[in-house]
Length: 269
Image (cartoon, rainbow, N blue to C red):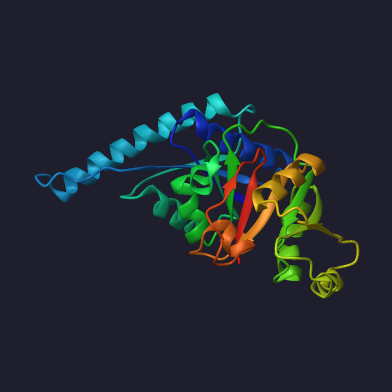
């Protein structure tokens, strides 16, 4: 597994790095790529040659700073880490392109705070979720390192078997148990649920949460997390749509609030 983990040297970004290290500890052959994008504009009076020399010097300096910062974050020494610093006008597009170019299996990025969806995911993470072809793992800045023993795949019951296989492939790699949960927001369709269950492989079980109290989606998810205590969530979303709208209330949902203390791995549909 190859993980691109982003950092802007801020305290908040440490959680994504710690999470990536945790995944590596559970999957030793994982390679970590610590990534940072710089924004250096060429002065109009500089020649291309002079700017190229300056940029290379700046990149070398930032890589050394990146190594120092990583040493202060990672608990284990002598980790197999690749450091990448690139110059780009926008860091988000650079991260997305780097994840694809470097053939990464996951992009890890820290999230900040709580509240409305955009506040939770942050503009950088939101952009990646909506545009990256590489799965994105949003790690809350409050995340504390511990082993990932249980993963819950939250499903909208569309493409269940295909998505289950992807989620299962990930959970198998990190040696974690995987279960499936579906939150019914618009009433329980028993026929749809039975059809979904039959599509699953032997040994896989589907946990259906029927929202009888007309609670919000976020309340249902938070309630599930509090009760079942998964270490991590896996979701799938259509690109270029807001995260939960494309998952559960396709086009008519209002902006949702969402808080979580567990990492969320988001695959593109």
